[in-house]
Each structure stands twice: as C-alpha cells, then as structure tokens.
Length: 196
Ligand SMILES: [Zn+2]
Image (cartoon, rainbow, N blue to C red):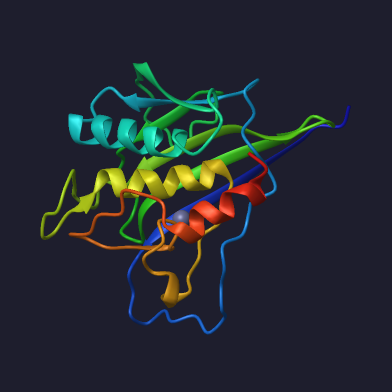
C-alpha cells in the first residue's frame, strides 16, 4: 500500500497587535485522526517540572473526556532527547529555548497506510523563552491551557484566528495570565466533524 509521511508544524503565537487577519476563520480540521492502533502517548523531558506534568496530564484528561478511550495518554516514563522535533517514533514533550516567536509548537507527522490517514507522531515544545505556571500569574502562561490547545492539533483541529473566537481553546494566539481549561461549546459541537 502507498505510504505517505507528511510533517505539519503548528505554533501558538504570541499575541501581536500588528497581526489582524481580515479573513473570517472557523474551526477546521487536519486531514488525519488518531486511531487506537497508534495511540499518542506523550513523554515529558526528564528535566520538566510538575508544572508541565500536571498541566499535560490534566489537558489529556480533558480531551479524553470527549473522545473515545485509548487514543491519548501520558507515559509514566520520561525522555532524554534534546532535539525538537525528535521524529523518533516517540511523542516527546520539550521545554527548549527556540525563539520568541511562539509560545508552544506541535510538530506532527501523519501517515496514510491506504486505509487510514493517522497521526503517527506528535512532538510538542513549550518554548522556554517564556515562563509557564499552572494557574493565573501575571507574566506566565498557564501550562494546562497551552497543552490543551496543542493537543487540540493532535486531535485534528487547526488554529482559528477570528477575533470573535478568541475564547476558543483553538484560538491561535495565547495570552499570559489566562486560563482556558475546558472546550467551548462550539468546539464540542465541532468534534463530531472529526468523526471520533
Ligand atoms: Zn495552534
């Protein structure tokens, strides 16, 4: 069967008042899904603190409460890679310093095996140029909120940049001192279009 590996990199950008898209966006989907034959099991880098482990576990739990079981999980094991994206078959989470252009990035590889177009690997970097916390804090991003957004890409949802959708988890800009810890109603209503 024909196999096709495609890499997609999606970042959550810093709010930039100079970027005001005119186009009206709405929630839309990537062309892949997660299947239980290849679940996405995230491993945190060994150096990452409980801020990240709590945030990741909670964000995965939130998505799992709306998805079939067996698609998303967090491993009890940690990884030691310092290369993002690793593209080594393991879904690794990093806290590397990249640049200040993004808050977090999800690098995804998907595969077409002729029967399914499935997410093969998802690597996430929480950019250490920024500070993360779990909760409201003046100059920090809420790790759980950012993970919830990035995992939304793994689940198959693209960013939206419509300012009227700024409350959505999948809004493409992130904010300090802000919590987004549950999916909005439009996002929940959108989930059936993903065919989960
Ligand atoms: Zn995004």
